[in-house]
Length: 462
Image (tube, rainbow, N blue to C red; front, side, top):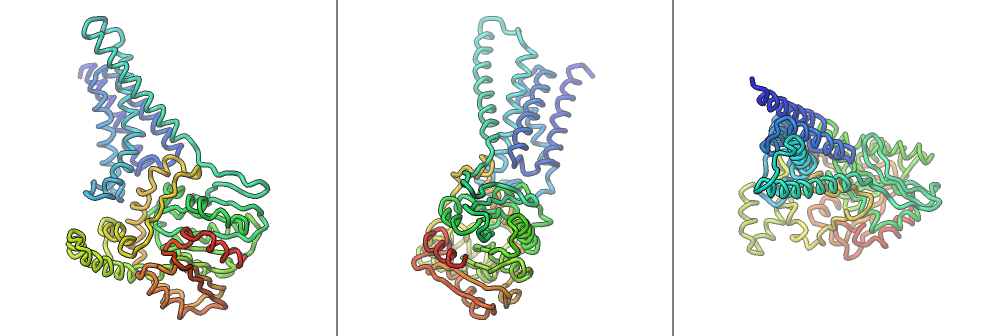
């Protein structure tokens, strides 16, 4: 084997080795600032080494190609929209850009730029004049611009999340068993309120800061990012991403807060899909809570989705939306085995029920750039694992009673897919005391649509 072939083989083996290591270390791509910076640095170093070894322009595309090929082969057992084969839909495009696209920006681009730099160093002085000199100058300009892009990306992903201080109180972003928690309050002696968000893989940290900061005057507010969402996206673990696992996570964070603020009992507030696990946590460990508070309360995911399906199909037929009618009719009613089949319901349920489109409140310093980029990726990846596992849970059967006070705050215009089942459960629910407050004019996200009324109701509890 010639020396040139040996150099090429070594360069490709190193690139493949880094691809295999990345598949084990960051199978969904870098999800934290530290992972992102190391990915950029190592990828650039692998590229520089390949360029120096081969001294060929072909190292610029082939080194990243070898890395990407090995990565895909080694993570073939990992599933989820961000790593599965591309899907031809609106969410499929988002998954491609924020999954493989972001990963490529943090690995393939610095590797290609590194290979170009290494090749330039190895071939220094070859082009001395004429057309070759002109091409060399153009190449250096392009290389400089590409290097600047990589440096800018590294600077952006290195910026940490932060939350504004509360003089005399508490304001921090912390982790509990790998789960992201934002804790804020003006007085640490106030009752603690743990908030569990709704959508699998979703985060309400931004919404809580932007719309419900007033709660911090009455409570120490701990906003949880459930496993797989927001700051907890790196903690996504298929083995722990179950209904029981979610309940266990809530209880773990609850115990942390009880010990941290020296309160035997705290308030538990749960929203939408998170309210299933929230009610189960209150039922299984009532000694840890002063009261359970549900809003946008979900009772039975499977039964709700069947109503959503029927209502959206009727709405589509009435509005002449033939493509949607054909799509829903062809796949039939839920439950479905994957996220993609739920996509038409997710995309159209707000329109069908006349709900305000939920704001994507991510333009806050509590999110890193990577967390912002993965806002929908986290939802899709977590949904695809957790949602099928929620199908057999029905609070009418599993939580017929609570031994602590139960309070509910619902929007007057809650979606029928949720309100019908909630009414059945609430009517039969036994508790030492229970109360239902209905906010006029509000929909499913009543807590964020009418924050002043929501805060007033909760403040009366504290």
